Length: 282
Image 1 (cartoon, helix red, strand yellow):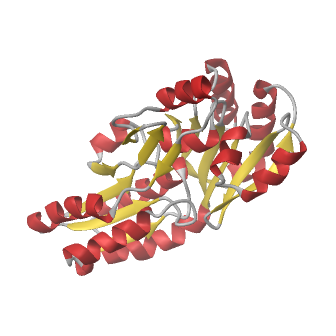
Image 2 (cartoon, rainbow, N blue to C red):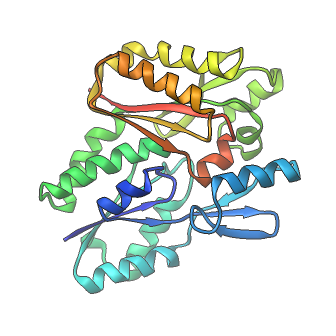
């Protein structure tokens, strides 16, 4: 049997995670003097409330090798192989922690660690491919090999309403330059080779900006694999999300348009009013 482990930054829906037996290892969020597990002890809404009340941004941390070792020991005791999918090494040390845990448990021949080179639902798209391959009966090394072909094709971008969270968190160096110029712009952030870069700068109200953003993606969307496209957001107004969905439906290209809410770790760094459209290039 092949088990699938993933960190909590993948932003897959709880229903999908349960249905496909994916085991989530949560990262940690610190709100002042309180530290809790992402999605277990602390939610995205709590993060936004705390940040607004304290005029500060929460901090985040990867799990420890010991956290992963416990899960791996369970798999080892059961005689199961493991595929672990993690957030890009450029954003967090979760893949490194997983590798150390594999060595500690002495289970190297039975564990594949996959760096998604992405974040949020970009990781989710990689995990969905791992699920498909596992269910088709492939072993972990074949899965790893095939996933290497997929990760460079995942297209993840998003527009953020406020620059403060990314700027304070230091996760995107390009944002520091934008931040120095103006707080009025709404940048389009793209994930490229495992790192975040500012691809475009929009101005205007959030609703208009997000519709412009998805329209600008049209050529890429029409070249995408048709199985799935994600709308991932951090609590954006319902009317905006529905308009984005309506536009994606109008393309008559995707079999599934999946909406997910960004979890605590992603919300810590992107802040409220963030929305992205994520898919896999053909």
